[in-house]
Amino acid sequence: MIVADASALIALAKIRKLRPLKRLYGQVAVGPQVKIEVIDQGREISAPEIRIVEIGLEESWIRQVRLMFREKRLVERILNSTHLHQGEAETLAIAASRKLPAIVDEKEARVMAEAMDIEHVGAAGVLLEAYVKEHMNYDELEEAVRDLGKATWLSPDVIADILKTARDVRR
Image (cartoon, rainbow, N blue to C red; front, top):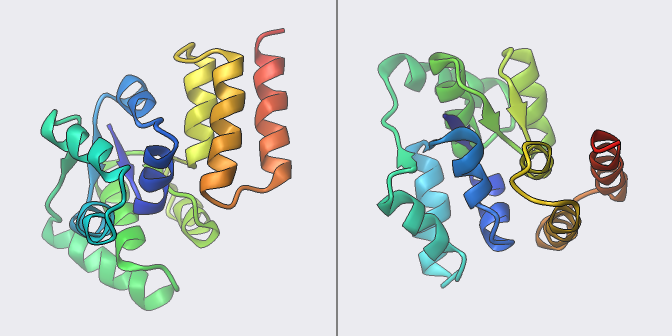
């Protein structure tokens, strides 16, 4: 199981690459705020990719988790000491409390994950991992990474590094 933040979940849904999450991690946990940001706010703007996330929820491989008391307290501490948003703070609190990895894309969230000793990956890293574990071929990875770069800001250096790493894996 892995805990996902809204931005990474939305980005992977936009490029129609949520299924690798199921293959790689079995289940994806989302906090209450992430569900609001992805599903509820997605419906408000008629975002077509939201249906893919809804299917994951219906099939129960994406599941909303309730925050435990200690996680709520940790969320408050994170919000009071960073510029992170509620969904990012919930994602990190759930991951830390339950000893789960997290999918986070924003720089401050990644820095905080490192500070909290939370194993983490971004959406691009999920795609690379799917390639490494042979859930997609190189051409599919290349297309997915380029699509991700169109769906969300992704540095050209990150794109180049992922594709180079992928080529090196198969040598």
